[in-house]
Length: 158
Image (cartoon, rainbow, N blue to C red; front, side):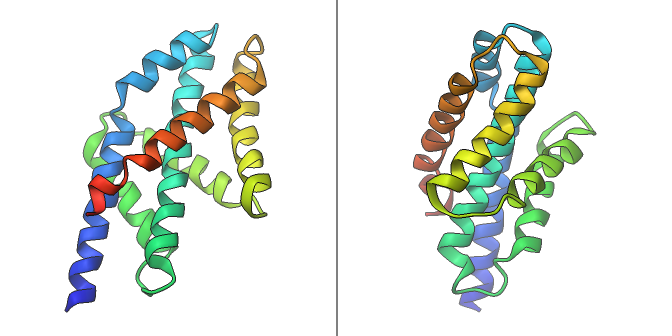
């Protein structure tokens, strides 16, 4: 019984975090300030959401994945998608975000080297839409956003 209630609490937390990810207007404003094209800014904003979802998955799997069978990829995906659908008015955003999430999940490796590849994956996609932004600026921005995001996750799962 305790495990079931923990599962429900974690699922609810994932959905609430996802709601906040897809409704974070501050990141949208920041992306417009960083990029020189509207398309680049939109893509960077999307990649910020994807990076946060990836970080959320890492935290959930690190905290519960080792001890609970239910904390697996299907559980994570199901609750991410529910959180997106419940809280976003653009019907295609779920597919875009989940495709990006899966792209990052397929990157192999561990530690700082993998994290660098994850950020570079996003930065390279933004650069295709806005070649005037420096790649390192995008990577630094993503790293900062993810770090801030992870620091605030405790509020959702306490």
